[in-house]
Length: 338
Image 1 (cartoon, rainbow, N blue to C red):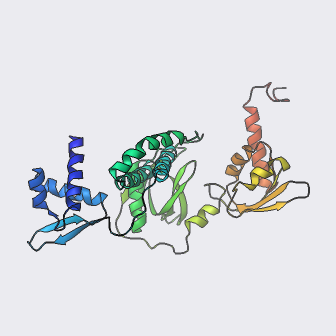
Image 2: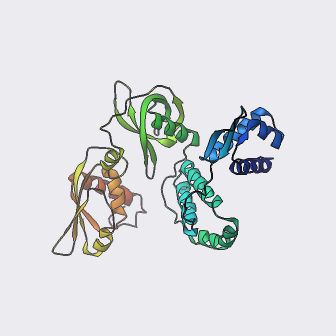
Image 3: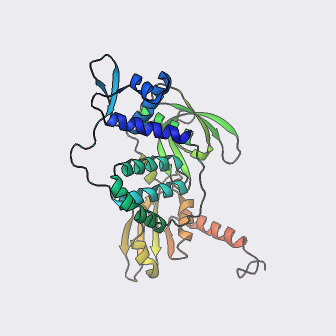
């Protein structure tokens, strides 16, 4: 039944594209032997997929719809690399726990494939499968956020409409439930994914991060809030080395000569500057908060980077190193267990 419904929608789309006077609801009822309500649903389904659907007046008193021809003008042909790149992008989004956006990319790929002439598509299929198999994605350790699609859809609509929402939110540590009135502004994606919103509670009234997996339900409240014209999501994100928000520090790191080549190709922070040193090392300077995330990143350099400033970062790195060493077997690190 599912396949039959899909085939019927495809047939309707072709009918709407191959007519100048358009297709009415009565036409759909007769052609597909369906009720008026089903005909309306079929028309609406085609309109959701094809942005070119337009209402036309055929002069007979019935509303009619057709799909505008895509063949006006010159459209560059869809390439194999474009299709496989979209498929890889969707796979990466799914790996990062962003299934809702992966579905959007899947839809774009499907639309582009539909624009390829059948005889060309047949020739492309074999190479398409080979390229897909060659586009591997490396496993990326770290938390995988499980975000409900309905949550993201509701938040995205509220963001576009500047509509306040009520979050049914579960605290990560205590697991306690709370109901929060917020003004949603956007999303920050990283190892964990967050909603950036203005917390409208009188005792807060400031921008906060809300973990997307911890949002169990979104209540749309209607109305509108006035968006802060001075707020910039990019600037907000740049205040931190990762996602965690805290007062920014002036950060100075010394990269060892052995690691300089890799550091030159690395973006530590958008505000970074490099200073070559006489001994072949490199000073990296930037301003950001998120000291804990900086430490997590520094450990990946295996001692290739030395922290010069701020002293608070040195302390956190030392504590983390001691905790890590303490978790090892007693005979694994000299001096431990004695």
